[in-house]
Image 1 (cartoon, rainbow, N blue to C red):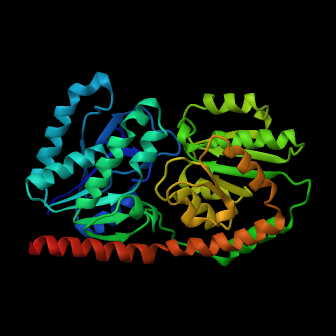
Image 2 (cartoon, helix red, strand yellow):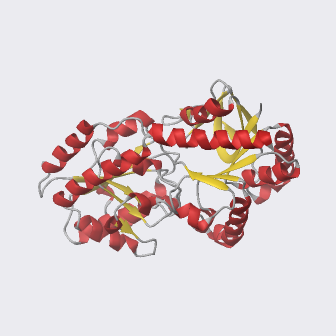
Image 3 (spheres, one colour):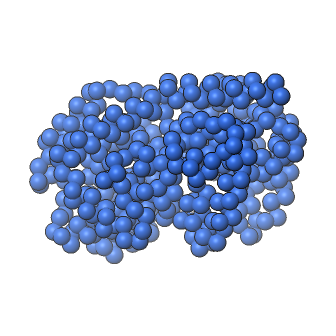
Length: 389
C-alpha cells in the first residue's frame, strides 16, 4: 500500500537527511506511519551545507521524499510543468493521497479525481489570510486562492480541520469531516501550574514583565512588529518594565528597524531559533505569551505556552479566538498596537493569576491521546470506505 502526502512545505536536506523548521517533524510523520505504514512525502526541498540549531529531522524509517521543483516565482515558471508531471506520476502509483491545503495539494487533487484515487484533505490554514498578508502580489491573488481553497475543500470526500470552528465556517465541506489539531500535548502536570501561580504571586510593581513570541522573525505577517510598537506606546506613558523576547530564525533587520523607530531597542531581545525542548525551558522564564500573527491555522506555540499556565494575548486571526478569552484578543487593523497597549496595561497580577489557571485548563483539550484516537478513527474510516468503493 502506497500513501503519498502532498504539501508545499520546503524541507532542508543535508547528506540524505531531511530537516524542517515547521510542523512536519518526525513525531508528526509517525502519526501517518502508524496508520498507513509507509509515507511518501511529495514536497519542495532545498540542499543545505549545515543544519542550524532549531531544525528537527523529518526523514525516519518508513518515509521517503520526492522533491518537486519550486515554481513560485516568475523566473521559475518553466518548472511548473515538471512539477505537475512529478505529482501526476506519484498520484498514479498511490493507493491513498493525503493533500494538505497548498498549491501542490491542489495539483494532486486534480489528478486524484482524474485517476479515481481516494484522497483526504487536511485544512491547516486560510489561503486568504496567507496571501493577503504576504505582500502586494499576494493581495492581488488572494481572491483566486480563497475561492480555489473553498472549492477544493467543499468537494473533498474527507476533510480534517485543525480548528474547531474558524476554518469549518470559512471553508465548509460536503464530505465527511473531523477536527484534529496538529498540536498534541503529552504531559499535564499540576506542579507546572503551581509553579506558574507562585511566579505570578511574586511579581511587584517594579518587576520586569517578559513577553514572548515564537515565530520566524523575517515574516511580516507573524506580527511581532505590533508588540514592539505597543512597547513604544508604553514607554511614552512612562512604563518601562516590559521586555519582549523573540524566539525564531530569519533576518532580524525589519523588526530591529521598528524597535529603533519606536525607541525600544533596549527592550527587545532576539534569541534566535531554539530546539523544541529548549523552547519549553524558555517558556518557564516569560510572563506573558503573545500570538500577534495575521495568518494562522491553530497555533502550536500558543497552545504550548498555555500548557505551561502562561497568560496570553493574541490577534483576531483564524483559530486564536478559539483558545483565548475575548478580552485578550486584539483586532487586525492598522492601529491595533494601541489595543495591545491597553490589554497589557489591564493585565495585572490578579488577571494574570486567573488567566494562568484558565489557559492551563483550556490546553488540556489538546491531550495527545484524545486527539490521536480521533484522528486514527477518522483515517481508518477513510481507508476502509475507500477499499469498499
